[in-house]
Length: 313
Image (cartoon, rainbow, N blue to C red; front, side):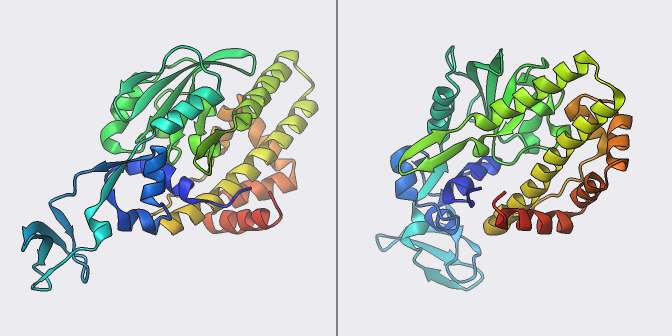
């Protein structure tokens, strides 16, 4: 699995897409000129207030002696901002949308449902079904979440690609959580081109389809439990490794990672089985029980995920 890159950091700007100066972008490993050339950043006006170069107090920016200057009330003196503080950019995800549209071989024209926040990307044939794909940023923003949910469908076929951190279940409304994917896991930046790999989506949907078919065929109780145990192990390993990568990413950005303990009920909903079946599957398999316990503990999940990373998971 690839290590987090500046492109990962850029995609996570979608959690709170606001203008940033060259200093803030540089701290995330993002080279503004390079990303501007690709179309991922757009220049925007410098704000009236910038941080003092000594104490970081917000100070009003003015023109003094034909130069951009600011007076810090905390330090009690004038200072000349760094050049990087005077150039500001705002993230632009249009190139990512175009790449996703092409990667999924979408039909129909992309529709803007909420400017800068929600798009109906188009329709694509995936895992034997024609599905409408939506792309969203800012779904974790309390101010925007309600507006976004109102625009999302309630059917079981549509897919949602999230720019930024995947939302918690309660922030998805009635949208099927099995149809929500991180856009960051599908796109990568190579040189000045954005590449899309739709394999994770296809594999997940094909697995869900196979589970439904197995359920229709009605195998014996032991066969059902055995199949579910394998699926649960794979799911928990993926979740545990995801905790490790998310914590590492948030530490690089200096942001707070909110750990979520997966429940047996949520696992049952994801695999469309009764919660009692998940409970029996976990009780009957010591390895599965250990993985489930690890997934409930932030530190243990991080340490296990770190070992998985070293072993090339």
